Each structure stands twice: as structure tokens, then as C-alpha cells.
Image 1 (tube, rainbow, N blue to C red):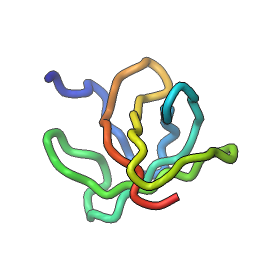
Image 2: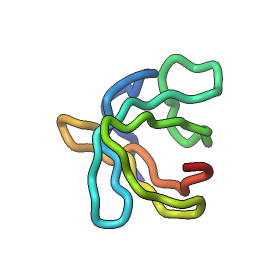
Image 3: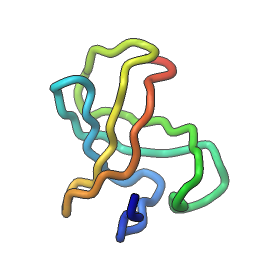
Length: 79
């Protein structure tokens, strides 16, 4: 897998995919880094701009807004 060629910073807008739906949200994480580092595991929180329905364990995909790069995939921990 290749690395995302742009830095992802705290509170940056991202696209979130849950099932077949797409939402915009702001990403943050609990680790100390100001930008996401490649090949690391993070616990992120994404504040969606609209309400969404999801459940713990649902698959999620996170992409940059523009240009489109896949940042990460994971699972919903808490909704």
C-alpha cells in the first residue's frame, strides 16, 4: 500500500463512508501527533456534519476531501 501524499491534520475535513453512504466530518485523534503518520494505529473521533446511523463494529472508510486519497479504514467503536 502506498502512503497518502498529503498530511492529515487534526480537525481537518474528511469524507467518511459507512455502508453505501458518504458524509463530511472533522477528524481528530487522541495520540500526541499533530498530523497522522504512515503505518501507525490511531484512535480517531470524527464529528460528522450531519446525523448518521451506525453501530459499533460497522466498517468505516476515511478519505481526504480533495483530492481523493484513502486515508484509512477501520471499525466504529462507539456511535
